[in-house]
Amino acid sequence: MRRDSRLSGVLHVLLHMAEFEGAVTSERLAAVMGTNPVVVRRLMGGLRDLRLVASEKGHGGGWTLVCDLDRVSLRDVYVALGSPEILTMGHRNEEPTCLVEQAVNAALGTAFEDAERLLLERLGDVTLARLSADFHARMAKRGLCSQETQPDVA
Image (cartoon, rainbow, N blue to C red; front, top):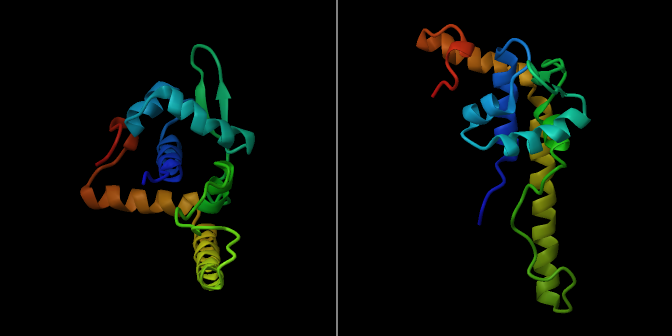
């Protein structure tokens, strides 16, 4: 089963954007993500709607980060993506008549809800600023200075 990696990809892009001065084109962001500019534009639309990023058309245009990294949590970004389904597991039958399957659904349903609640809570505890600080610490450990000179630090 294919995993939804949009949250990871968007966080990647937002942290790169925090390192660039001025507007960044979809093409440049796509190169950073190793994807197509159309994919970037689709992802950024939800972020623009929630005023995390802004876009400018024309020469010198592109995407700019307009949010305060200290105030935006990973959960905020998750919501900006439309709150994609977290768990791919589910019930075999949503409204079973079999009492055994009802018992299974009740147990699994509670576990699924608990897992989603815990994950969303944890995502709410981490800000973009915290991710950025982690990134900068990793760069310093490698003896690197500016992200802008390197499109993607592996």
